[in-house]
Length: 473
Image 1 (spheres, one colour):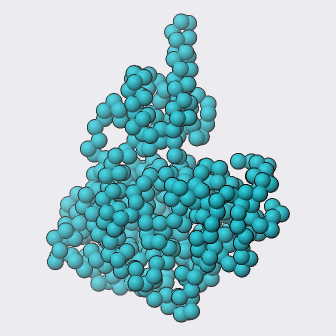
Image 2: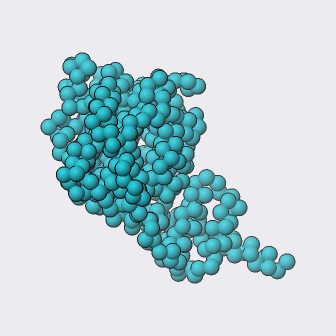
Image 3: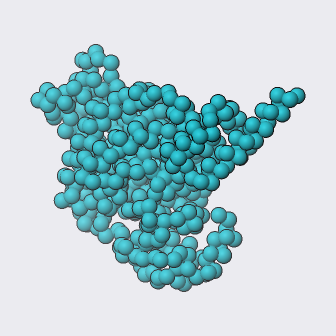
């Protein structure tokens, strides 16, 4: 949506509430493509805030108020049917801010490193502690690898990450709890022993170290990393910087935005760490913990035009994980809102890894009394995936329906990049070996949007005409 279009919407006076100049609020609006584009273009923060298919929740902080004020409205006037659902979002952090460096049940970075070092020392045959990167501010990013070094079995590799986003403190706690639970159960618990004997488990409990420290010590609602080089405002959103559909929907080009995508794909050390680990370990499954919303999310994130060709597999594991977590909702990520350059799409789309994002709890920093249940269920979830998702795509039958779905998926991706027919000629030619009814049936199964169906059918007709002209020459 172009700036003049936003200005026109603003001029209609559609907002229906007055904001408090001194509060940091979560505001709820209807979830639709128009509102998503307005938030994206204004650079407002609406990611991971309890949004649903019906509602978008966005952060109305001082920066957002200044943006809206710059449109020369003392009362914000962008959306219909708004309501404030949290009058002071930073209150959840306040119980910890009074304790200096003591965050209670939540780990500081220093405490995290101490725990990882102690764990590696205690279990030398089952662990390897590694520094896998150095942040923009010169801090180490740690990974700990769990596996029985004496086992000669053919091992499957799994990746578990926490703290892509600085303010999501709980996302570090689940990986840490899982590490301790598995190691302490080795030899005494058959399942834990089997997992560690037959797997390589790579945990990065705090990926965004600089941002995590900044959130814990200064600006509680900080989301991004703390890169300053070559950009006007600090920080890049690590979960918009991955090299799959980078720069598309839901990723801001504005450096001050909380969802700033970065100057180029994979520009950030944190993202490079994930790419390097994937190259080294060739993961079969990856889980990234975030907060909040009580959701199990999977690809695609970048497009809501269709489900992935492997949606049945994602749904199978996603539903089970939702049950393990006590009723989390399993859903394709773009079912909430499209977001490009994300972890799940990158590992699945580029490396064929079964990848999920788990949105923990009902706020960024759940109450201390809620944390044990979340970490316990999260550890069970990981056990389930380590046991059951070891070869998730091996059983796929290369049926005609699957081949059609793969071609359609590639065409939809090409449509988001380039409308030139030459970019997806091969996929169109592949589809021409199938009947119209077969293609339509798969489009329906993938829940393809009506407009996208029309686009592809038109492209197929153009390709048929092109082929017939070539044959007649």
